[in-house]
Image 1 (cartoon, rainbow, N blue to C red):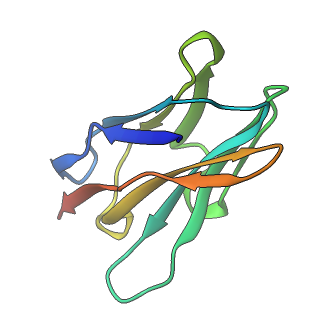
Image 2 (spheres, one colour):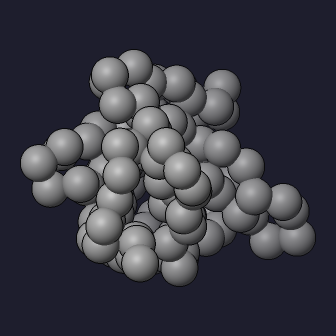
Length: 115
């Protein structure tokens, strides 16, 4: 059973920063990628950033230059450094892990950016 545990969410003023963490535990076969998704109120879950096993990264246009995804392979942990936060970054951030055989979701962590 694979578990993803997110942390680091909270309330921050516009222009501020937060760092999200997602730790994966359990029997994990070869990881293909780990990602962060945002589900804003009343919207569908959307990809924010992804990092592959080889270290390649990709970002949604709305966060390029402000967010950075990184990964500690030894700890099976992925991070999302969020700078220059905007009110439109508000929502629940979910961690996603894709392995060779399956994919998994965390429980989500709330980020609220006040104007």
